[in-house]
Image (cartoon, rainbow, N blue to C red; front, side, top):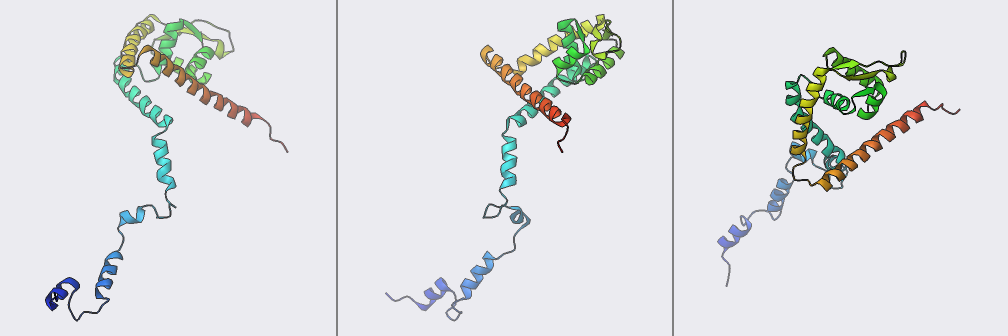
Amino acid sequence: MAVSRTAKTAAGGSAGAPAGGVARKKAGKRRAPASPDDAAAPAADGSHDEAPAAAQAMHKSVGWALTVLARLHRVELGERLSALGLFPGQEQLLQALHDHETMTMGALAELMRVRPPTASKAVARLTAQGLVRRAGGAAGDGRLVRVRLTAEGQRRAAALAALWADAEQRLLAGFDQRERKKLRKLLRRAADNFQEARENDAQAGAQPQGR
């Protein structure tokens, strides 16, 4: 059946229009200016794929998960520590002295995985608060100075122990004893890796450079 001129016009544009008119209009649409978002999009050849891939890898890394967990744990304890007149970080030193009664600066630093000067400053702050006192030691060697909790320090440490146990239960809810033990061992191994790497870096830096 013959197709009318009107139908042809509706299907393909005006009868007298140039054959390339529609093609040029379509091409014009394809060449529309790119938006700012388009300019930031990765190129088709993958030349800008490295940064997003690196960001994604960081987001999925163990270090990222530990950072998030540490921040949440700090927030969880922060307000409770403040109610005890303590700052985040001081609970570790108080708990160490509560568990070991009397310790040297060197032993405290080793347990807390900090340098002796850092442990000394922490002890000085707690001493000023009346929570820690010196228990004697060798003169001239700060690492051998022994410290222990005062009566008030003991009271705060006892309250801290209950606070810490409650936070531990919230942190490990749903974990059985086997999982808790395994997680603790894995975290300690990871901390040992960092500690060993730092010590190796320090030794390498201390070695004289060859000519």
